[in-house]
Image (cartoon, rainbow, N blue to C red; front, top):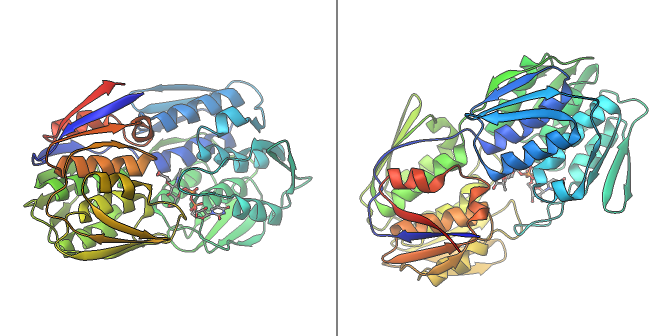
Length: 418
Ligand code: EPZ
């Protein structure tokens, strides 16, 4: 397992190109299961999670080629419709093939995705919705089995705006003739990217970005040529690294509209943020920021995936602030690691109270999930002295060549084999 060694206390400057969005790419790659035609998807980031998607699609019968950030998918044979445990356990998003396979074959078997460190992560919202479309759901040896004599259009209201459930149902409904109405949908930008892709494949999709999405399904969907949107969480992570360490950082191939809640919070904390066309510039003195409370919420609220890096930034605030994590039940694992670097954080269930300190100090720390790992990078860049981050494989799941990009921005970082 690799470690990152970071010598902090240097400013973060220069220009960094943002990669394509992992959380937009994964559902769109799953959507290629809806058609037997060739698909070509560009701006796909080179990440461990994309590699897992690659393995799963190949296992299910697609022929995938991945190079130069382009993913090409052909249909080699009739698809398998069982996503096995050893593939699903590596990445929860594997269950996004459930909707497409159910729609095409009226049956699908997939391993119940286990929970992860940030929460139990049940899939009840997905399954309740599939039942509304006519699916029978049963369980066997840790697998979920869904079958349907016939799938029918329906009106489905999610009890919570689940991103994955919204995406799964949009894809399934795209192959069901008639109008399916999804209510209380997730409104994340990645949902809109999937909607654009499904429309290009021939499905009628309207309302994405709002809480009601109508899908007019068709009998057959055609192949797809598509370019995935920029990664707004990578964008926010680099914005927070510059804000915490100080400097002037320009991010290209991204868009400030994707990170509005963060841009507003950074401005309130005293950091200057400018967006024009496809670039964002962050200018920070590196002085201790003003304390700003945040609550994570479904989009358009503050994204839960930026909560950990935000906490790393607030660790040096000039005062006390609160972070409320309303999406996942256990997403403060990074707090204990930040405290090893001198942060003063008290966790009370879904609330963390941060008493800003003058200085963070480098220390040996451990990443527990993708975004907790990102938080440790933000803290290490701003800290005095050397930080060693262990279990970097978590970070590699969600950030393409992050050490190369950070080095380009002036951060003293090396990847060492442990
Ligand atoms: C997506 O996960 C993202 N992953 C997550 O990013 C992100 O944190 C999350 O949305 C919230 O924005 C991808 O897009 C691949 P949810 P997803 O279904 O779809 C509960 C990252 O770091 N829930 O919106 O799994 C669930 O337990 C990852 O890139 C149910 O109770 O998120 C959670 O508390 C982490 N039942 C909340 O809803 C269900 O059936 C939000 O989950 C489904 C979800």
